[in-house]
Length: 159
Image (cartoon, rainbow, N blue to C red; front, side):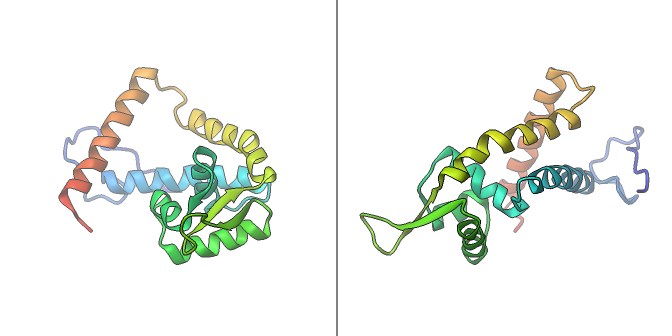
């Protein structure tokens, strides 16, 4: 892997040199984060794409497919495929909504619920590895800054 150490002499948000723009650095860091977490999830035969859905369902079980798609940030057809795989793996079950039969709600199975205690520690571990050597104050500052950048991009409506 090529060393793309930051150019500490420049205050510009965009650096022309490969690997120096903030967007590139965030993407590169995310990819490393994701590979690390995915390898841990695979120990329990959970695919990376299933992780996002499980996280949402652990917080609020019984979401309908549309709401689940929205919360995870996936297109509905992608959600349908992911849910199908999760049903086959015994992690979730589908059930028609009792008040609106057109909606399908997704519920965790006992197996899906049990995975929370096994998988969430992996997310903690990967985050701890990534923030090694950073103070609590630096981590708080990073969260504040990255959230501000996210909000700036949302407000600019770049998509």
